[in-house]
Length: 297
Length: 248
Ligand SMILES: [Zn+2]
Image (tube, rainbow over all chains, first blue to last red; front, top):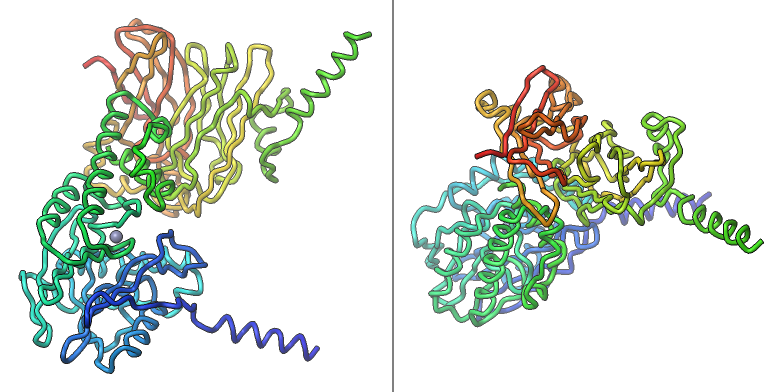
């Protein structure tokens, strides 16, 4: 009987413990880091750690770009940053309204949250729904996750964060409103979900044509390093070209299917170029894209 | 003697081939009895192809495709999903249609989907496939019924016809909420009958449809009947009648 009670107590203690994300900060420049998110779909096993998060240490504080999928994730980002610096996370930028990018917000009680207008509106309007959906997928991991709304709407091209200047591009295509951050000090481009590096693109809220336009614009920036929303950080322009190729392929495939009266399964059976098929998560994202985008037609 | 032996082997092989339900579910037998009573049936995944997504992300719009062309002179095609609160999906008379259909459905949870095809000898062939989903598709109210434009858009739709050798593919879509009535406060309101005709008033098929079909439904049927103009006559539970014509 005592053993039994002990076991129950043990289970209670371990299940009350937060999900351990085992996060690592990858250094990009002297004071700039990113945390690489797994190239997977939401699962109990990964606790929703599927998107990249970046942070920049400035003279007085830390600027955090996106906060992940949960309160627990946000907390562990906070602890990871505390290992690197004593400076507080004072500024958080939410790049867009997808749940894997902003649901860690409420782990940062004293930070100011920035985003553009549309993202702020979406978080306020549909935030609770996003939490509900992720609870269904991630269960316990989502414990303590609450909406922390955007405090300041970004409107200008440049903003000074305690003496540290960042440049903003207000773009669209992955969603109706995607924020890209360019850091002139380090020549790093934080491209949000407009860029996926060799990882199949998520098109649930996408406008394919606008997305390609945005990527063509980003190609003109002479960055040293680009941090994508999903996939590893990289140096050249190849991933951008591949993303454009992927989006154009989706577009022409859907048009071909439409013209010839194909159903989604016949479209899915059409031949796919090798470099596109090689993207991680191709099988699942491609099917999802074809089904969703054909429903919109 | 040899003939008898061969017959026994054949019977044994065919029983083994068809005897077992490939996706067992506690609901299957009740639903089958309700639909085909005590008529003879075999499980036949060999001759019935059912395509579903690997994972149905959006439970409100799950595309499915059924192709039972291998069953010659099929008379009727019925689809149902074991675990949906509205199990029936579509019931097609195959007078002049091929046993092929694609459409989108709502799913409430992970469920087997079945295609029952009646052959010319009065035997039902049953194909099975499993739809993986987190579900929730049936208990959500229709989105378009909230649409203020509903009155203006209701019944608007189109038909496109694609010729492929000797068959014609009739692809159609129509604006309709397909309300299940399962959400408190929302009345049942869906298309429950479709008649496919030619411009000479020859009926190709009469089809019963159910509210497990997604809102703003899209159907693809196939036929070998050649005509200058295919006409779809759609009826809903409120007595509305909509006409769609392939003639531009
Ligand atoms: Zn996104």
